[in-house]
Image (cartoon, rainbow, N blue to C red; front, side, top):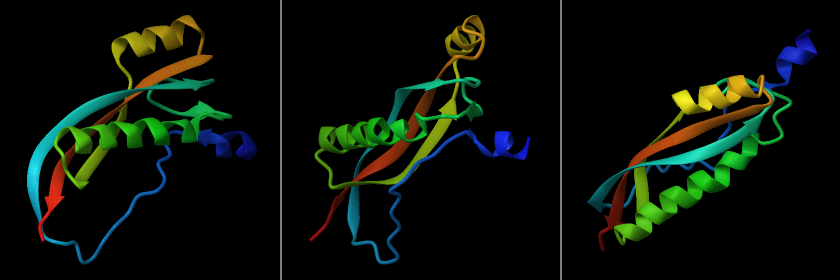
Length: 117
């Protein structure tokens, strides 16, 4: 039972950076976007068993943030928040497949900045 519970994954995000001495910057825009996440064997927006797709969220999330930085011609994104949620349709699909397919959405918000010289 312990091994079974230990294999559960709800969310994983890697590559987060923190800087104690942030260069001065100017805010050039705010963004809110969403990325579809396809997972398997579990519940939408919750725990997934033997989740081989846990790290599959990284690239779509990074790409979404990078698109927002480029859209505002910025240099970086700060105060980024990622929320992992399931919509009503996601829950219906999860129930219809008896937990085999567990779609969800990663909702991403943040501020795009441009460094000042």
